[in-house]
Structures are given as structure tokens and as C-alpha cells.
Image (cartoon, rainbow over all chains, first blue to last red):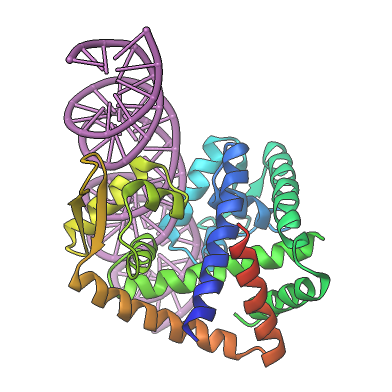
Length: 134
Length: 134
DNA sequence: TACTGTAGTTCGCGCCACGAACTATCTGGA
DNA sequence: TCCAGATAGTTCGTGGCGCGAACTACAGTA
């Protein structure tokens, strides 16, 4: 039904807004926070990043450029194939990422806390399932 | 818990990505589609739009500018207070909005259909409640 | 060696969102 | 009445985002 979809979409705007607010407080963007989150436990190539983020390779170039200019991220040459570029998070980036994640956690945690436990569990379960089968 | 929040945030990226894809197919942006959705049953002032969208008034100016340039929207002067500007959707805008909404509906509908009815109902209910008390 | 494919970068475009400075209009109080 | 704020929008400059097209450099292969 239309209203269901509307509610879902508006929910995503609310959540994205909360994340954007947190990002702004920490002087980064949502895209960069998301990038840092991925790099927390990966050291992907540009192409892999693009696939994961659903972005064109030129978009990834720009995103990494800006993050690197801020000292959050580093490019390193591939060992065997000199065409590939691996991206690593720096200490500064890792620290910023941790603070940002905690802040998002806090913000959305209070939002989620407003729901009764059953609803909340259902929401989270549904989110997991939807994301899993993307 | 951190994973809950992660799942929720990734869900919003997935949904926003789907909406963005639909928007691109129809040669508009997500922001403009959202604007048209609001105008479907309102005729707000710039300030009201800003409040509803959570945007600065200068952002609203730009958004309406671009939509108007595309013929999707019209500005009209306020009746009593000549400072205010009301925004109305045009026929073209209304039609585009309807097509976009249907496409988003279809896209997210299949996504939602993958959930069993209980999960789905819970997700929608949670979404409604979260949005309501923003 | 020459050809073809792949990984990234660069450039130009339009869009988005913000804040500061500005214009026009409205309103309440001396 | 008049004027000092307050309010509604616009404009301008800045930075970020995402795309596609054109380009470079390297890899693998006939």
C-alpha cells in the first residue's frame, strides 16, 4: 500500500537526517563516515569500494581524494598489480570513525528506545533481512 | 547495540538507493521527487517547506528554483502578506510525481514483499511511529 | 611485439545544502 | 504617525556529491 511505502521512505529521511547531523557535528559528511566505516575492517581497492558503495569509480576517486586531503585515509599501491590502489584508514580516520559511530549510535538509540521492545526487535530483524538479501 | 544501528542505517542506504534509481529513470532527483510529494496535497510557503523538509530557507529557494525551471512547480504571491511565497505543483509536476510514486511503490513493494507479513507489519508500524514523533 | 582489456584519474556538468549579506514587507510601540 | 525591529525570501560564494566521457598506465595474451 502507498502509505506503507511513504512511511518507510520518510523513515529513511529521518534516519539519514540524524546521521547527517552527527556527521556535521564532527565536520565530515555522511559519505565519508560511511567510507570510514567500511575501512574499519577492510583495505579494499577503489573498484571494490565502488561496488560496495554502489558508486561509479570516478565518484570513489573524488570521495577518497577529499578524505585523503583531510588526512582520514591513505592510498597505497598494489603489490603485484601496479594498477590497483588500496585504501587504508589512518589513525585520525579511525578515531573519527569511532567517535562518529558512537554519536550515531546514541542518536538513533534514543530514537529506537521510543519503541516498545517488540516493535524494536521486529524493526531491526526486518532491517537485517532486507539488507542481507539486497 | 551497534549492529542494530548498523542494520538500520544500511537499510536507509538501500531504500534511498532504490528511490534514487527510480528518480534517475524519471530524470529528476530524490529531493525534487520528495518536494513534489509534499505538494501533492499542500500549497505551502517557502518557510513551511523548509520546516517540513528540514532544510535552510536558502536550500529551499534553490530546490524550488530548479523544479520551477523544469516546469514542475510554480511560485505564487501570498494574498495578505506580500512577503510570503506559496509553491504549487504544476500538471506536469503532478503527473511526474504520480509516475515516480508508482515506480517507487513497485520497487519497494517487492522489497517489502520478501518479508513475512508479521515482520512487514511491524516494520511499517515502527516506521510510522518513528516518523510521527520526529 | 602489438592488441585488447582493466584500474584509476581527470575534467566538466548539474545538483544539493549551508551561511552571510541583502531586499522587501510587516508590525508593535513611542 | 513613524520608525526600529522582526520576518519572508533571494542571491552569492563555498564545498561536497555523483555521473559520464576521455585519458593514462599497466597487465595479459595472441
